Amino acid sequence: MLSTLGAPERRLLAGRRPRSVSAAEPEPVPTARATVVRSTPFATHDEAGEWLAGADLDEEVAAAVLTLNRALHAHRVASADPYVTEVSSSRALVARVGYGAGEDVAEGRFGEARELRMPGRRRPRRSMEAPEERFAALLGGREEVLPAEELVLRARADLNAGRLAEAALQARVAIEALLAAGVATPDSGPAGASLASHRESIAATANAALTGELPGDSAASLEEAVVFMEQVLKRRRLGG
Figure 1 (cartoon, helix red, strand yellow):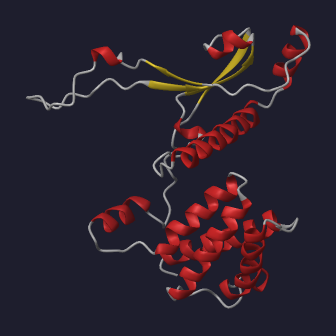
Figure 2 (spheres, helix red, strand yellow; figure 1 turned 90 degrees about the vertical axis):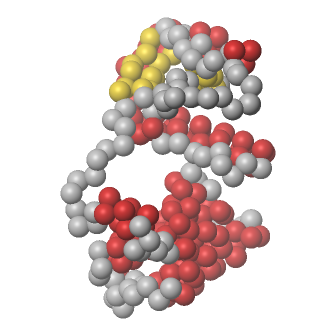
């Protein structure tokens, strides 16, 4: 269930005609609330209380975000809007895990709940990667983004969301883009791995994805390949 809090009424919104302004004052920002409800209700109030007392709140939030992202993905496809984006828990202002009557929970009211203040996007520890410096270099045109960098990110997002077919197809294109770019990789990495050694397995998984018959070990093999490509790109960023 999705709701928007603090949004101005449509009847109060000005028309699309431009208006004169003397200063760029910040506009009020509405807040979106997403409520994920389990399909099977608790039998009794005591049962619900016992569940909440023993619940791993971080796991519950992670599962709820996964469900929300499935809904956003479905909305993106149904509306054919490529700019509908998925979310992470770090973007939330607050997360609540609890129980209550259906209509109450839909309105943000609980019989009992636990509230987690989300940390937001953590500042990365100082490292040799210096993402802020690379960001400035990319904006300034001193460096270019490899197509493979975006493709690997998309493969990671699909893999985390459990979309194995999409992850396999993204990974197939990503590894070909890395090889075409001539990104140097060690001949012997973890367990003797290299881009070439992952190429065949990714190709086989991607071909299986096209027929809808992914093998049972697809998630593990894709995870291994995507992690390796992430490591390759990290070494490149570090100049290795």
